[in-house]
Amino acid sequence: MQSIAKTEQEQRFIALVEATLGPAYHVVDVDIAVGPRSIIRLFIGWTDPEKRIGLDEVAEVSRTLDPVVEAADWLPAGFDLEVSSPGLDRRLRLESDFRQAIGKDIRLKLGKSIERFGAKPWGTLAKVEPEELVFSQNKQEFRVGWNNIRQAHVIWKSEE
Image (cartoon, rainbow, N blue to C red; front, side):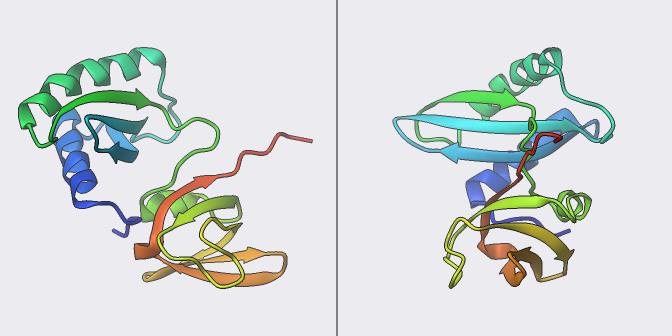
């Protein structure tokens, strides 16, 4: 299954989380900022898309993962683990996440800029293809390869 680009460290962390938490939880996304005190931001959801993550689940996941990450000892210094639910501007990582977002407006953060659209484009997700995603913006189409996407999230709009 396709996924947006993740560093090797982020991929290892996702695998560690999935092995620790089991199939009930879904890793929505993760960001790791390595520094004197690293910050790990983990966004989780239930595997069942109809269920919503609450504060109790966030706290439980944090308590469960903290000693596991510490024991793994793969960060150069101490770390802070921030666990949260994806919220209204839901992040997208996996092909299945993007398929559910077809027809919605998406904001991207790219590794390489796209001519006329830049490094942080937005657009309506039109298609999910094996090698790339197809977006439309102001009646113009642009394509983005999976390996160029660093971050993606649905743009929340209030009901008018």
